[in-house]
Amino acid sequence: MVKITAVVLAALATLAAARNCTPGLDYCGYILRDIATGNNYDAQMKSALRKLGAPVNESSMTHGLFYCIPGGDGDVQALAICANGCLNGGKERNDFCKLP
Ligand SMILES: *[C@@H]1O[C@H](CO)[C@@H](O)[C@H](O)[C@H]1NC(C)=O
Image 1 (cartoon, rainbow, N blue to C red):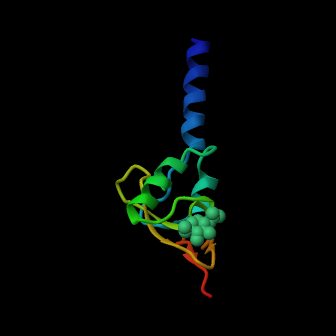
Image 2: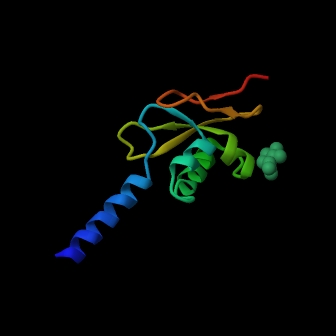
Image 3: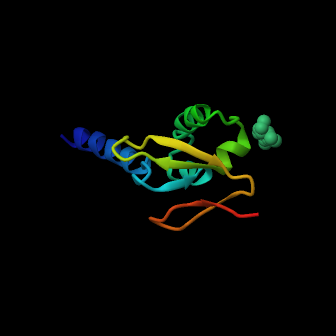
């Protein structure tokens, strides 16, 4: 019984750590990587960038702006690559591209 409880707790802790984005909000790539565990958002970000027709490299991954699709289970859509960098809008707020 003790063992089973430990396994369940470990599973719950993993879920809590690998947080999804908040549906309907815009995120900088580096913020998505922040809320992910390790690089587990990278695959989705790369496929979103490809759909946008954007280059997939370190700068588009970091300074891309991504929309968290409602009901998408944490899926993201790439909106733009911020030419001047992407800014953190704060908790529960949209991130945005820095203006020139
Ligand atoms: C990423 O790709 C874009 C477009 O090809 C290029 O302008 C940019 O310099 C690249 N950035 C890096 C860090 O490789």
